[in-house]
Image (cartoon, rainbow, N blue to C red):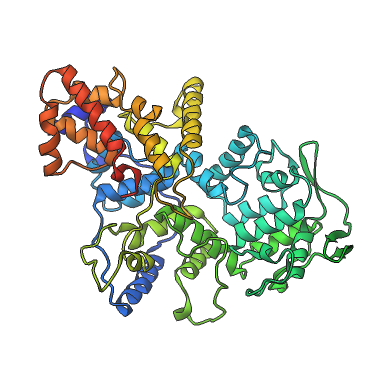
Amino acid sequence: MIVMIAIVGMVGWKAVSPGVMTLPKRASVSDDTTTVDRIDALLEKQWQDSSIRPAEAAGDLQVLRRLTLALVGSSPSLEEVREFEADASPDRLDRWTTRLINDSRFSEYFAARLGDAFIDPVSEELKPPQRERFRRWLGESIQHGTGYDKIASSMIAGRGVFADHPATTFVASELAIGDLAAERLAARTSRAFLGQRIDCAQCHDHPFAAWEQSQFEGLAAYFGDVQFQRNRVQDTRPRPFVIQDDRAEQSRSVAAELPFDAFMASDHRHQRESLASWVIHPENRRFRRAIANRVWGLMLGRPFISPVDDLPDPSTSNDPNDLDVLDILADDLLDHGDDLRRLIHVIVKTRPFGLASTHPGLGDQVTADQLEASWAVFPLTELGPHQMIRSMQQASSLTTLRPDELNPVAAFQRWQRQSRFVTEYGVAGDAEDAQASTIPHTVQRLSGNETRQQSKATLFSAVGRIAAISGTAEACLDHCYLACLTRLPSAEEKTHFLPELEGNRKQRSRACEDIYWALFNSAEFCWNH
């Protein structure tokens, strides 16, 4: 009770009973229990066949942390933790998933991570405002329930002024580079929307895959008529697409041709429209399998199949028993208007998302790699630099930090600090290819400006307010741990830290600074468990 009273005093909440708390209503979609049950049953059978016992269920606060890290790029605020604990509704996790999807932080973070598949994240041709405009369009499209098929079609076939039609960034960013834009667009289209590395056949037939050079060239020809002039993406009159064959020392014209399943294509006035209709066609199973795999990776820290742009061909069998998890997710997505919000909800409700990252049965019979490969534990992955800095900034505030609630100056300063940290820290963890922390990363956390600044006790910082308002040393320590790690301290941690928090206000403030600094540099803060 002391803890609750203290935190209510800090953030100025009104006392409300769990029964009257209001959360946003979930998107209007049909029941997803059948799909979730099918996925869980499929994985359960694989576990039984391999004699693998899955991990126990993760704690509620642990699930909340991984949910907020995945959807808004930071650990939950102390304010959110207390609201989540007070929410006693049986569909609490489902409602909080909706709440986070509707949050302005979602379009700022999740859309940026997903958007990296469609536009080069390090391209120097795109200015920050242009990149931000594209990410905002993508995030708001998902939030409003725009079908992924329409989102993809807008990117592939969109036309118009760059600034007014952010979807054209997909095409414009490659055209702005210059030479071989059609080839680069063919490669990005195949990798981003179909999960296929057809560009491996750009110079010659693939040595061990089915791709042929002619297939890649035919796909590139679909972008042969597009131009980017006066900041406008437009299609010219049909003209031959010419390939310069350096090996044969000659040029040759190539006709637009689909690499596989050409019967799906529909004729349109412009070639890119025909290509888009083929990419998003209901029978093109690669399209929805690819996005299901990417979103699974963003939610669980690792895609269901790696790498995300080199997926195996989908099964051609009509037997339901031959379907894998990606097939089930793809079919559900198609049946519900390609609503990515629903895809996120389904993934969150699957059993792997709710499992612990620890397993007591490791030994000679089963290894950690086997458990992760079979999704019998929640994958342990390092936070990316964006998640790291966002989590540090959030822990330094008791209330939830949302970009749309900050004044322009504060928002710009926050963005500057995030950008500087990401540049200095470097890309360590990624939802598609997680890596271990390096020595420079550790040094950056130990002695970096952000670590010191976010753990400083001031009149308005979380550290200062926790030290000043917490009624007891134990409540003070609880608040520090909940704000940084989304959990309460263990008995051993209490034994170590509580004596440091005894004393006058100045001594407690210094102790809180040290605790924050230690937690920021702990492995638990830097990883998703």
